[in-house]
Image 1 (cartoon, rainbow, N blue to C red):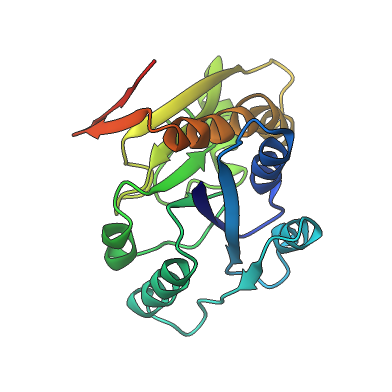
Image 2: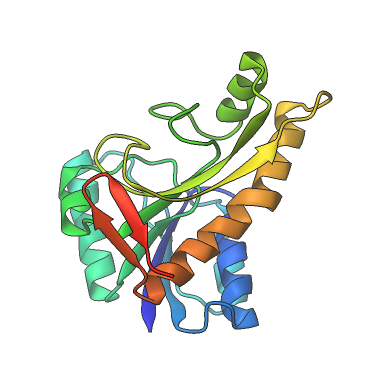
Length: 207
């Protein structure tokens, strides 16, 4: 079984997408061993608890990046997590955490990287920027996490059409429903089936 550790900060809709796919049998060889939030009031923790998944509030306030990294490393090592999934996690991790779990941390980002990504691009911001730029397509990307924000090797991408009457909020909702909730579980499935290989900047997926 692929043991998943999930990092969250907010409502947990991507976490819910993973839970649903596990319970439906789509992710048949996967299980969530821990959900960790840096925010006490994150509804994602409630989602986890409703499905009897261990949920933890681990605040970063007052800690250096290095100190927080070590706490997370110790936690996920104790839980024997095979893959760390950042599902709306707004806290920046450091070199120690990235190095410890190299090519074992994935993130879902609400744009087609390299567009509208990098430091500060989270929440509604990528969608506001996409509308301001006038792109006709946006979407979501699942990628491996490296020290530079949103810069790791790309596993999957899915495009979503931008409509003339879109607001940042309607675009965000559609990108989640049509892209994020689809490709994040798909990437986890591919990894669980040992079908993903990283070669430099490229991710190769076996048929």
